[in-house]
Length: 259
Image 1 (spheres, one colour):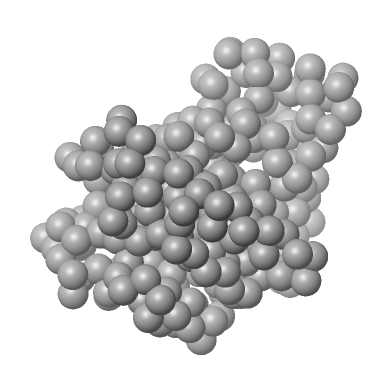
Image 2 (cartoon, helix red, strand yellow):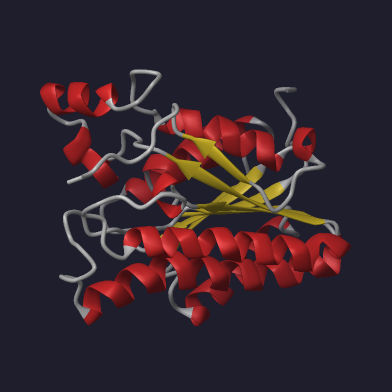
């Protein structure tokens, strides 16, 4: 792939403050795109620091505090990005939450709503709002972050696999509906990635060794592994791929427990 494969493109990355979202935003900027990032947390300074990193890569960037589960917040994000960047060529939905160690039987209404509203409803709202802009442009790429446990269940993950499975069907339905407008929609399904999101699997050396032992490639994914796959799907190299789920998991499938 060319180093400037996204030159002239404008992208939005939700959940861009840290982890996979940050890595994808930086990969897009490194490939020449202007990038808007958002996150529900802004007070810790990480969102601002990520924007500074984007700026250093030469990206025209912006950072907004956004709760993707709220339609008004999402619409403000889309409107602000269009005003600042002129268009939306790429949307990467990376915002997400999970509550580890919880079964569906243990799941409270509040926990269910938090996970489904952020992961599934939030992805839908962003796809819908950005998709309307893309329909008018008759072009665009949408990438949704699902998970390996959106394809195969994992014990102790509660509502999280349900939300991620929903994202896969949302992706496929949108791909069908938007293909006539030149818009591609795909999903990424990572396995275990070394982020703060699931630090319990790798923060301690012995735990990381055990977790990596479940993966055929014998290592856990770095955020950059997922970002490389996202960059491919966002680029013209994937111009004939839509409605697909790209597994970036080192060959891993969930074991009896992911507690």
